[in-house]
Image: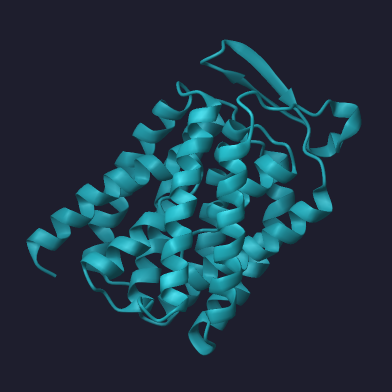
Amino acid sequence: MDPFSLISILLFGIFAGCLGAMLGLGGGVLMIIFFILVLNLPAHQAVALSLLAVIASSSMGGSVYLKDKITNVKLAMVLETCTVTGAVAGAILALILPSLFTEIVLGIVIFFAAFMMFKSPRSEKIVPPEAGSRLVLGGFYDALTKCDVLYTPVRMRLGLFASLLAGSISGIAGIGGGVVMVPIMNLVMKVPIKAAAGTSNFMVGVTAAASAFIYLTGGFVDPYAAVPTVLGIMLGAYAGTRIMVRVESITIKRLLGVVLILFGIILFFKAGGLLSW
């Protein structure tokens, strides 16, 4: 790979890492598009590198969110049991089966989630502890409003099912599953958007690692492209975590909605044969 391509990966990785850490997506959503549309890398190689980007973003961003106590570790561990299972299954299916149906269904789900993000009110409805699962009761200090936010997730069964779906998507498309988990936690489980982003950022690294192992053993990881990918993502992820805590929740929701629409369009193009990955 030529020096110009390596530098472009580094610079775009900084941008993708910043946005991914802010929204809890891990950066893989943007990196997979960049690798295929700009650098024209083979599909499985692009997915493998994207998964490495997700792991790097989660390692950097997750550590900062843990320090700031934004991540709900208990909730992440409960949901992760399903996402890892789905990630391994999705990675195996991606290597042996066409994913047309998954892409169409995911595209529809993502457009619906984007619509709900734009439609959501400026203030978030917090569920009191007695109305939800006390097992995963969470709370964090919002640096913008300068007050503590206490909440408890609801609809745990639906959340677990969605986690299985998110993990499968991660293995098939190489995006880490955050593009599904953040809307599910925020819209369905009533987790505040900042806590949802922080928790998702913690989760996607584990999910992506489960899928990446399949691609690594298959020889799809390019070590020359992996270095600027990981470096750029980690630099951007750190910047993204610092920005997120100082931004209003409604701004994060609107920005996430734009990214969801972009990814939904890409998925429909892919399902229609206009893109190959």
